[in-house]
Structures are given as structure tokens and as C-alpha cells.
Amino acid sequence: MLSASGVYLLNVRSARISPWAPLLVLFTDHGPRYTLLAAALYAPSVITIKKAILASNTAAGTFGTYFAASLIVTPIALRTSARHLRAVPPHWKEFAALGLFAALTTLSQGTAYTLTLSSYVEAVKQIEILYAIAIGVLVFGEARRVKESAPAAFVMLLGMVLLAVAT
Image (cartoon, rainbow, N blue to C red; front, top):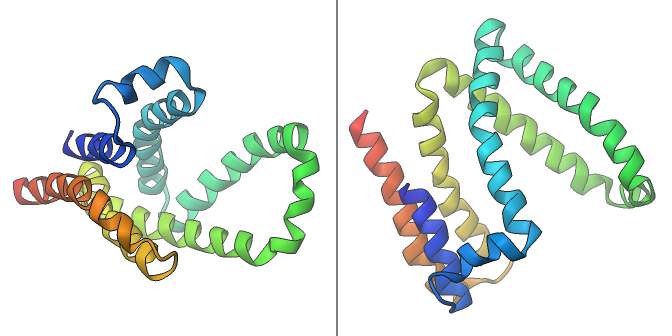
């Protein structure tokens, strides 16, 4: 809950809007609705990948998950995004890097799932907030925006700390 509260706080503060505006956007904008759907689907995906990893091992569970996702996404991408696929070759390094980081993330996350509770793994992963802030400052020059997002990041990290202390 603290993580979600932090994200909410971040959006309200950075946009300088009414506290009700992010809720109203759920009824007027497709983006936040799909984000909410993605969040709802994420929880079962955590449980099912953990089950796949425990039924085999981290590498096989990860491969099986990505293979199944590829079987589902490939026809959708070919049908809806064929003209955009031409953008891949000129940017192959970015796509390869994304694939590498996605694989390494899933493998390390999968190993963590075999060693502790899924809820703990997901809570600790919130440390990515600090990494994202650091990358934003160092790579994208967003130092000014850190002041705006720091309170929200603190609330999200507080949730992680509380969960870590509770286990």
C-alpha cells in the first residue's frame, strides 16, 4: 500500500493537480486503465513464474515463461505492429540491451523466488526506485525533478523497509 501511495503522491505532486485527478483519469484515459490492468495481472504472473521455477529450475522456468510469452505476443506484434518492426534493425543494440537486462532481471528474480517469499522479493525490488532516480540524474540530467519525486520515492521505500523488518 505504501508503494502505491508513493506512486499516487508522485503523480499528484509532479503534475500539481487535485488529489482526485488521478482517480478521475481512470474514467477518461486509456493509459491509466491499462496500467491498472497490468498491475492486476502482475500478481498472478509472480505466482505462476515462481511455480514454473520451482517445478524446474531458474533457467528453465525463465526460458519457458519467455517462450510462452513469445508464442502469444509474436502473432499480435506481427498483426498490429508489422510496419513498426522496421525500426528494430537500426536500433538493434537498444533492443539487445533490453533483452539482456530483462533476462538477467528475470533470472536473478527467479533465483530470489527460490530462496524467499515472493512478497518479500517484490518489496525489495522497489529499491529500483533509487536506481531509477540515480540514472535519471546521471544519464538524463533530471536533478531538478528529483526534488519533486523524492517524497514519493521515500514513501515507496518506507514500504519496502517495513516489509523487510516484518520478515
